[in-house]
Image 1: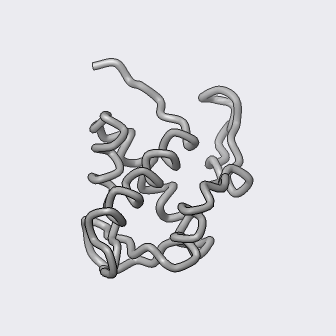
Image 2: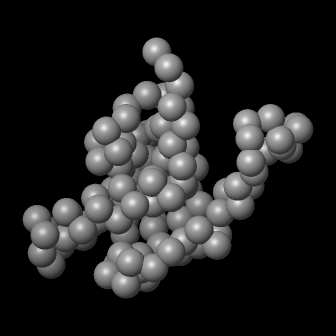
Length: 113
């Protein structure tokens, strides 16, 4: 199987689509997002993609757009009011993510999410 790197921009776009789809289905209820749901919107379901999605969701939790619902696995995130405002505005979150060009350019440093 060929490894396909998914950009954070595509992951964030799939996340906003998943939230909008949940908004249409569940009007007036809480909205939870999982890694599996976002991977379904991307159309890619391999370990590397799920890991990248999990990192993005964890970073969005640090920023304050999501809140972790459970302590165990699989991780579930509750979308906060701030996250809903972001989805409705369709603003960009790329300023919170730093990327490095190329796979080996970090040289031992972990990519900061």
